[in-house]
Image (cartoon, rainbow, N blue to C red; front, top):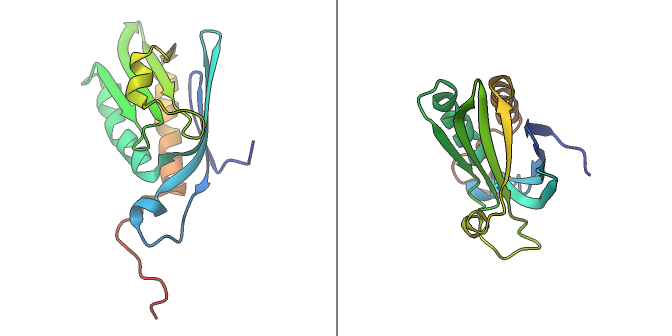
Length: 160
C-alpha cells in the first residue's frame, strides 16, 4: 500500500487518502478528486476498492452531516461518495451507545455495479461502533479536510 496522507477509520472501515488525482487541473471538480485505498473487514468478509473513490467535497459533506447524527437529531445517516464507490449507512441507537454501520465499496477498476446496485444485492458489511469511535471518525474527517480542503472555481493555466 502507498503511504497515505490521511487515514479515516470507523470500525472495520479504513479509508487511506493518498493524494489529489489532478491538483493542477483547471476544473475544480477534477482538482478535488482523491486517490483512495478503501478496505472494510467485517462479518468474516473483506471488501476492497482503489482509485478515484473520494473527493474533498465528500469529506466536507460527511463532516457537515455527522453532527446531527451524533447529537441524536438524526436516527439514520447515509454517507456516499460522489464517485458512487463508497457508501456508509449509520443507524442509532442499536443498544446503549452503539450505532450500526453498513459499508458498501465498489471498485471502479474491477466492477460495473453501481453503489445502489451493490446495496440492493446485499454486498454491505455490517458492524457496530461506539460513540467514541464516531467522535474519532469526526476528528479524522476534520484532519483530512485540513489536508485536502475543497478547491472552488476554475483556474487559468498559463496566465501571468
